[in-house]
Length: 169
Image (cartoon, rainbow, N blue to C red):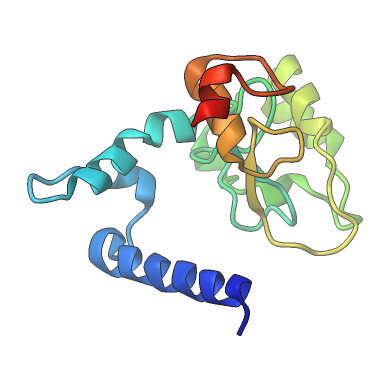
């Protein structure tokens, strides 16, 4: 097994340990900090606000994305508030996607205000049946990078090159 394989195996193992010790089948964003938590875990939990404002669901089939609770519109208002109420039984993004894997434009416009509806209708849907995934808003590619996280934390808009301090580090 090469170095990449070992690193991947280690990462998977660490993920399982964190899930067993801290998550215990709970949502990461709903966890509360405990007095006995390690300093590292507390720092991770303290980063949730930044993380929560920097991610969005990448819509595939819309099957696992809640219109009420998940950030699912990547640009603008990531959690648009529906104009109608939950008693109508609409809870999932998939309910706004037609059988041809296109947005049900009429329904989107009926359920959301004009700006939110336009943002939703600008989300490209995949041609193939894919599960929803996560998207890092801080990077044009949608993939997380330490560099984009540092830019977000520092409020920097610099995208080309690093400052002398970061080059030193």
